[in-house]
Every structure is written in structure tokens, then in C-alpha cells.
Image (cartoon, rainbow, N blue to C red; front, side):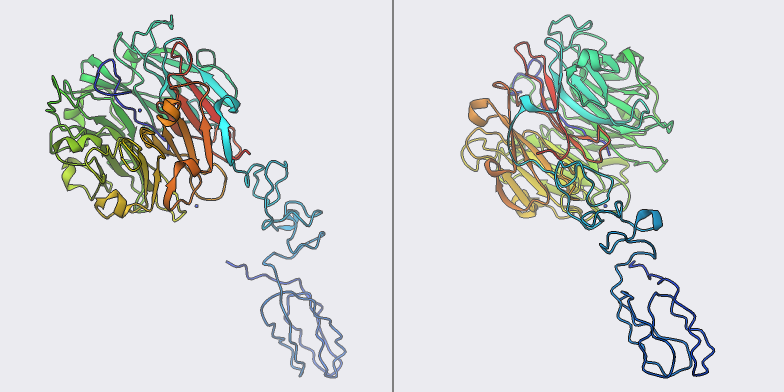
Length: 593
């Protein structure tokens, strides 16, 4: 399922925000028909290559070389006492030229190189040797990074234009252009209409295919989607909901929380793939609007198929501002599920398949959204972050609703509610529920809480809650792993996301940022799965360091497999990169050293 990232509020509009997976019954080779001289005219039905070492008057002088682990029983009528000893490796009959116990693929076996005994399905991979040692078709599995890396050494860097603030949002959007490789959607919330280098906050989105080489987003993009009016902040959120119309091309959602249109205030645009060229969002296939001041389009995400029509649906956040005047919240926030078949202009309240609304003003329900199959029933479940829940006495909350979800639903009646540990933790400002960290086949939830004060003010933390995530409670009691910042103001967890299985070990890995590290130089950490217990991020397997100060404000993502090698790429976005806030996306190839 495509992966998305929610962002925090844009300071220019909301000044009180700082910045966001049988043993074969092996037929043995047919043996000789034994017709012994003792008058036995029956044929033995051994189908292996063994010959009996019996002590009767038969003329059999079979030498049993069968390696099966079963005990063969002869069907002849003599009195021989075969005691075949099998050590069969589970391979079909055929050639094993290198005697490694595995039959060549050309004879129906699984050995991809029958001239090299060190190559077979159970061999260990050696990183970056260019040899598929375990015959799984991949050359890069068995590789994993373990060190501190400078972003300047990334496999590719995609750079925005002047004042683009590119990478404000990012999404692995699926295959929009139909070439068989996943595409990226990169939100550039500050972009002006013509890319002339003024900070107009009209906003836009770059759609880039197979992004494994460096260059400017302007030149590399297959499509550029541009906001309708200055100030719209188009690209504040982006998501790949999937193929909502069933035509074989992935489609795209773009949020513009400051925009207004026929559907209402705060807009989300749906655009059907394929996409190419420069496109005004005003020509989108659907334009969905919210209620004034609810800040619709702050977030958007895939919802899975909630209405059971065989097509994926849309997940849209309207958290509302957390102040009106001065710290006087009046809106609880909401999350909407809309059928993927929607077209044209419409208000969300009129067309939503489900509305999940907060029960207290200021909770910011819908600030962060994600979905995944937490309970393994084949239907996507919804995860909603409400980080400002603390204003009315809470600690931040994450609501878990098992799909399918429909109708009007109070957030307080969710199937499970996960809460921050202390007042002001800001739990739920980032959530990700589309990864499996322990390999049990159930998706798991990641939660960011950047204001946790474990080692001083705003140390921050990330939490891992394994599916089915059915137990309500504080995150310190329900989480299987806690990833903590190291010092005051690290703000770990401002962004957290599943990084896919970047090392090919069958467990998804965790990406988490800490923008305040080293006096706001910032850092991104990669923790390999499975993760458990208490983990201080300074000891994480991999640390990524910025090219310059103040670049790690937000932006971590599983980019999907962009180069077709079977491993997911890691994306790190720094919207403040460059002296003119160009923004950049750094692409790290799966595996690597």
C-alpha cells in the first residue's frame, strides 16, 4: 500500500506552530525391475535409485544410495529385508552436478547455478558481490547500512526550485504512468505559479517516475500540478490512494488547506492517472471541500476499500486550527472517508462514506492519518492522530478503527485509543500503519510524540504498537518498542514512518526524525526491524546527517521499489534545503553499505 506523510501546520498561516510474507514427497528415480532367481517374478515398486543389499538367495546386489528420510518397503514376495536410509533434500529427481544437495533449475529443481556448490537456496548472501547466492533473484539482499551517513552521499538528490519548499509532503504514489515502476509525488507548498522564485504559497506537486538519478524536480518531473491561487498551499499533503477507477493506473490526492472552491473551504483534489505535463489543480477529476476553518486537506491518505465496491477509497483530514484568536480552540477536528468513485465538485459533509469526529474542541482529530490491515481480515483499518488532545486534559491520542468504517462515528468510540503518557506529549502528530515490523503478517502502528520529556523538555519519542492493536491504554503500556531522543529539544518523532524492508530480512524498518539534534542541525535515524524494548536513537543502526543546519524539519518515507531490485528505497525530505528554501528529496537505495 502506498505510504504517506502528514505535516504540521504552515507557520505563515498558523503562527503558533514551530514548523512536520510441504515438504515434497520426493519421487525417487525409477530403479531396476528386480526379477530374482529365487522365483520371484514380481517387480519391486521402489521408485528410487537404491538397490537392495539383501542376504537372501536373490541375485540382487543393489547398493542403496537413496538419500530419502523415509523407509522404503519392497513389494516383492521374497524375504529380503531392505533397510533403506533416506537423506533426501526435498529436491525432485534430476542432475546435481555440484553435489550440493540441490537439483538444477533446468531439471525442475531450485539450484540456480548447478556448477557452484556455494550457490543454492539456503546459501547466505554476501552484500554487494553481484552474486545471487540464495537463488531468490535479488543481488542486493543481505545488505544493510550500519553507520553515520551524510545526505550529500545519497544515491540521488532531487532538488526544488527557489522557494519551492519541496518535500513539505511526499508520497509513494504507485504506478501513475503505467511503466511498472512506482512513482513519487513531492509536495512543494511554497511554489509560485510559474516557478519564478517567489514565495507565493500557491503550491504545487511534482510527479516523478523511477527517481534514481539526481537533478532538479522541475526538469525530472513527468507532471507538475499547480495550485489555483496564491496562498492555497497546494501540496501541503499528498497521497497515493491506489487505482480508484480500475483503469490500471494509480491515481493521486493533493491537499490544499487554504484553498476555497465550489466544494467548500480547504480542498482536496483527486487526479486520475496517467498524468503528464503542467496541470492546474482546477482541472482535477474531483474537488472536495470542507467547512470554513476546519483546514480540510491538511492531511490525506489511502483508506483501502471501506465501501466494499472493489476500489480503494480516500482518507481526508480536517483537524481545524488549534487557536481562534489566542489559544481558544473551537473545533474538534474530523477525518473523512470518501468513495474513490467520487467525481466533480462536492462538499465532504454531503458525500462522505464515513465521518470520524472528535468529541472535544481543540483535539485536532485528523491531524495525522494512516491505514493498514492491523487485524488481518483483509480490510484496511484506520488510524487517526489527535495530538492537541492535551488542551482539554489529554496527552495526545491515536484512534484505531477496524474497517470497514461507515456513517457518523465518534472518535471516542474507536476500537482502541492509544494515549500519550503525560500532558503535552503531542502523541499522534505523526502516525504510520502500513508496515509489519515483526513479520507476523499483521500491520503495525508507529506513533510520533515530539514533546515527550524523557531527558528534558521536548526530547521526543516514537512508539511501535503491534497489530491488531486492540488494547486501549497509554503508549508506555501498549507499545512493544520505544525509540527515544537523547537530549532536550531533540524533538524525536516529529515525523515517523515505516521504511519498508530495506535490508531484505523480512521485517519492515523504522525511519524517525529528530529535527532538534545538535542545536537544530537535525538527524534522521533508521532502526532495523524487528524492534523491541527501549531504544535510544543515538544508538540506532543508521544515522543520516544533513548538508546544512535546519534541514531536518520533517520528511521520512518508504519510497517503494523505485529501481526494480526488490528492495524498498528510503526517502528523506528536507523542505528547507538550500539558501532559498528550495527543498530536496534524498533517495537511498535499498540494501547498501
